[in-house]
Image 1 (spheres, rainbow, N blue to C red):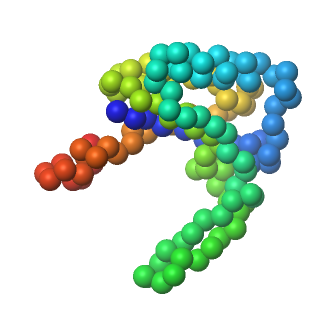
Image 2: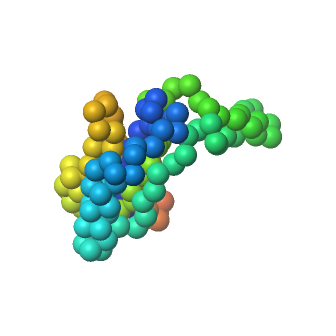
Length: 130
């Protein structure tokens, strides 16, 4: 089963402020991702640029989607980065997520974990979510 470890954005990430290259967070993240890769559970990981470099498509009433350019105001609901893993159980995903380095040192931040849908979730009789 696959899980996405999501780093929620904050004002710093939305401002496009990156930590200095000698900040320990880079070494910590590299070590964590190396450990995930060596365990054979890492599928992908990356940081995302601020929403000022992105856009949303809004679908309403069957009309063509409307393009909304970033930035978006509510930073606590935005994503700054992700790590995608494939593990055997929810408990294994929980254990890996507990080891995730704090992404913004000295700042309040959150990491969210969400399970991805798998093909078997859409088989007859299983609709409605895992």
